[in-house]
Length: 590
Image 1 (cartoon, rainbow, N blue to C red):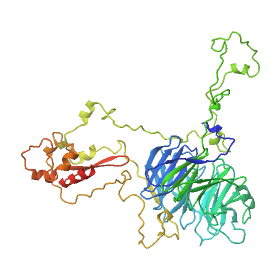
Image 2: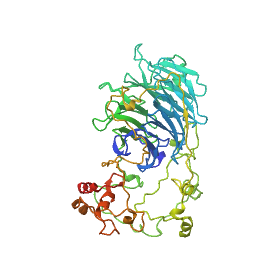
Image 3: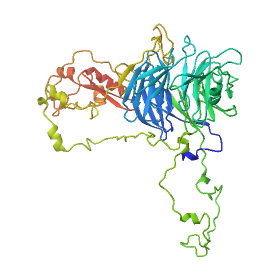
Image 4: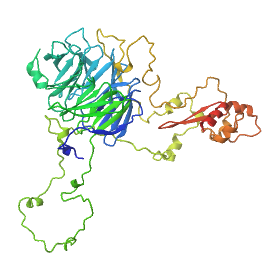
């Protein structure tokens, strides 16, 4: 479907579930790029899974962190991705190569981060129990934003639509509007509950189009304001919200709120269950409630920038909500008609003639005369949905899609490798490689130059406690909690999935294995015994190939290699151990 034709005459919000995206790992947060072509998902094991949203396939997996990813944000051109994990580290990634450009280490957990909408060199970070921090990526410098009350450091912050101002809100309901470049206070107001009581600010979200923004507060009310009115009121103003959205029946608290791509609708995810409430911003009426699986808790919600599609995360799975597509065959041709039953068609006499002799040729006037004019088919007009209100052209350097290498089931051995002569010249006998020659002949892991190590910058914040625990990891305690620690085990690179069978490592001294038993090549292990043979012989294993049968079997029993095979969802692993008792594993597995 062409993007300029997406504006429909009916409702422009999702109505039903449209499948799920399984990231293999537990998904925690997700965000679309500026065009909605790619969806980045942060997982519990530290991976970042990038989905091609048009094909609903995984385009790239980045092993970003060791601990869970708690926040993600795309740069404006889509080439960079900034992530934060629960171990207080903020990283910038190159989406095409998957390399880490630089890292920042904070003293406290990161609740949220946001890239500048226009300046790709600035990132807004909201640490826990600290004032917001404005990072500059080029020189690794940071600026701590001013707050209203130094004793209240539960502050959230967000850029406005164009990044000219930063809006901050604290636990006492005070909203500050700061100039992004100078950090000077431009405007301020306080959110009240109708009386003099104040309420804590949980999040601030801006629409992609227009000047509206919403504030999610602890009193379970979503307030929608006009940014132009806030700037007009100035300091200590008293602006009135355009809309107040809430669930009067169930008094639902809201976990995550955001605007639709066109800014006409607002979606809010319940903090009690997997339920999405959709309101129309102009009227303030509730138009739809989308219910997910009962008993699941919602973690994150993201609305597609262009289409009426919502992505929500619960129980580690990304759910997609979209409109019900009804086939309209009359859209293929203007004179196309749908028939309920067969109709006898009467053929005209000249219908299939090459030239209609009876047809009269009218004079070419008006639109018919314009058909003879030359039509420009090379100029590409910019898509209005992808351009901002102050832009006339699209960003042609933007990264909309990722190249995907085809998966080959049974690849041939080196189909496009060097010729045999080159292989002979580079080959050398094994006994000739000694000392430093072996190290020099070891190729790199990817056949190219070694990757440049990312620079890590430590951000020092005064008066910030260093023993805070991220809300995703549970409540801070004395260490007696039995909650399982999230993330990958220490030392794992994120390429191995947990398998249903995990054999114990061999602790004893491994005896020497006769190389004659491996055959003439000496590089491949002997063939695996059949399950029937392994299940019937438990005391003496079968003889390896090319091994005399009159040789004593005592040495074979101690040094004969057995293999255990298990299959996961994506790969098959084989592990060799020197033990004859593994025959029981073969018999029990089959």
